[in-house]
Length: 248
Image (cartoon, rainbow, N blue to C red):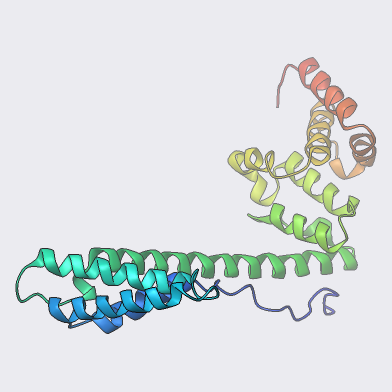
């Protein structure tokens, strides 16, 4: 198989945004680790002094990292005061620090999952594009998530409606092919695909019930009707369905 036209190098996804406040809190926790209440109190005094100095300079007065560092020293100072005599700061026993680390880990996992999903969509889009160029798209089986792949291919085409790809979706929905053999998948597709595709699929299904044994691949006119006037095509599909008593 030839190399897909769209199989090109793509830059990595966006990096996590820098959060100065979070950096400030982490710096304070590292410094405070093992400190006694007296040492933290001294560090808090220094932080307050630096905050007063910064407030005199317009470019430093609104520094989110500096504010976060001061607030973290104040929080740790209160934490050790409540812990009693002889307590030292340990981020492993700090519920706030542990919760933030857990939230960071969850966010990182979500970003990784998003990047993996995007890579899967890109690869699947390359695959379907190659099949279209080879004229063998009709033989492909729909898979979970192909609706997002259609969105990507549409963006690649400058939002041009690709009739062959949309017809492939409609035929798969009408016949319950591949992923769409599951009624739940067909139901979910109703919220993910544009109306002309859904109307095309409904019309194909109704026509196939009207004349059992009909190959939906031979009903190209249904797609033309659905694209020309989706509302009229939907009305026709509903009329045929009622006339057939909703039988399958």
